Image (cartoon, rainbow, N blue to C red; front, side, top):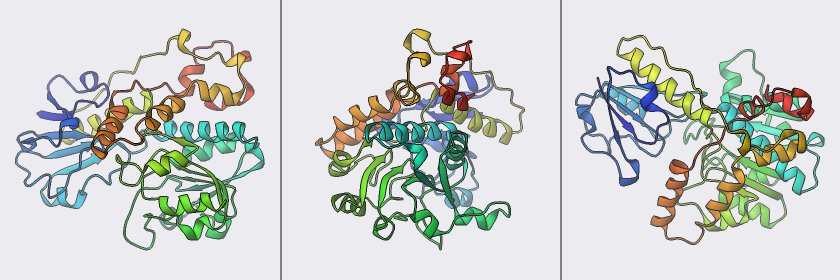
Length: 368
């Protein structure tokens, strides 16, 4: 089988079986040509697949996106061409949960707010929202779970009502971006929601879920104290004004960790291999962090351990340097940040380097 894949997909050379012929493309130079001479295509969110970009199926039988989201793919159109589509659901759930937790505690530290005294509204309770909820539960932080579509699908899940959600101090968004239907998420966080006043808004889901124009106005009026954005309307050409006003601003990397990227590639490769009727036994991920590059947990508060062992600060600084660039340069450098920056290890991997758990702050045990 001939496989065409985004060159930035993590560890493909280790994960794809030897009897599959792999060729890679560089998404930085535009949409690849003649992809329909391959049997399978593996992509990321930067590659859009629709009627305009893929005119015919040719030999193509399988498309896999090594991502949790799929709004970059017209799945109905692929199906109409007889092309099977798969994605890596849940691959980045823990990484996103850790990103939001790190941002939350950093904000509390710098704003002199005790997170345990506040209520967090989680909008979208699938894989990433569920991961965050798990950490909030372990840390004793009060939360409200809001996901009406999930409540419709699952009898055992009960969503909070909208009034309960809008009474929270903080909102964190974990929904797909959908434009139509009764539960459409485009601009779900609008002026109507923001008028209820919040200490902090966090969006690590998709750009467009939060109405950035309404968000800026709410901040100007003092209705929203701060906001953290990892995703942007018109991404990768983000708004300079919005980025300038953000407490933290990062280039769509909340789900980026070595573990998440490995899972993303492994899941989609497994689905591809099994689609073509073969069994799959992936190798184990064995990369470990160097102790010398880690912040010692015994010497740090919980907040500082999260901050120093994450890369939010690095990404925030790098993104702010793109403010004021032309749209073309900004888009390219935004993509470079996502593709070319070494990813971090998740917190469990970090603390597993320390055999003596007695030196760990008690809160860090939530990652074990």
